[in-house]
Length: 400
Image 1: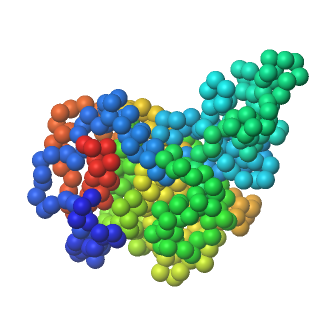
Image 2 (image 1 turned 90 degrees about the horizontal axis):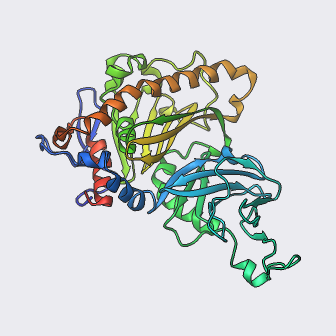
Image 3 (image 1 turned 135 degrees about the horizontal axis):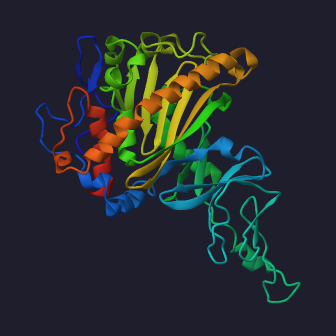
């Protein structure tokens, strides 16, 4: 991404004063897509992306509430690798490779609740919730033989660098260190620009209001590109409000890997999600009460913040033409009582409905990638600088 310094300066403003960032798109159409069509359909390209993008740094892997009590074990995948999210007796979330240290068998392919230990079904090797080997029956080929301490110390589950933030579990498959303090510092450095922008939010107070899974027959990049596309809102999501509200959006690129937009008056300019506002997420500054922030934390955490709710779409790329979205909506802990139940229900209903409206669009976008004409698509400089930043980063990492 040579020649670009973040946060990006503004390139222009619209007649309403909204910002267009000085991104990579020139004024005239190039006649050539930034990412080739084969990158949306090819198995070889998909495998490269799994290694060079999803196995090379911090990525979304799941939600903290998937392992909400000690002994909860939840299998996930990141970068195509099977992992386990585990809640220990000390209430800490840890992530391990989902592979027994004897013969490599996955310990579970379904969420489970265990008592103190995770057991492999093949030879009954068992592991403590902190990953340490607890037992390996008949290890010395004798009835009462046990694993000697030196060998046991070498045979625990292999940990993965992980960090919990805002109800989400992130992992870094490329990290050598798995110490929580080191992980926290590394993750904090990665997310620093967004943490600074959202420093008024107490993310420890977030509580789940609703969750839904969407299993889509589309490439993962189309999910992100659609999320970052503000141009389609008045045409596909008319319920968000008048066209003037849809046009009132600023491009925002605060880091190479944190890009999106902000509706300065989105909370009031668009149609209301609920009749009654929910309690705010923290001490919201007056100039943020009406705004909506929409960001992609590259590559697979799509986050949406308003004064009184927080939305996440975390997703797993499963195949070139399959992506599983895990959409969750969070509110402040003070909004979880009966008083706000109707507002919470309405909020989640509306937000899930907006996501569902994009489904037929995504499927048509995927179908279009089978055409050679997709290699000649043209992003528009007035609308698509943010999408171009995303595509340029993908292309740089993978080598397109």
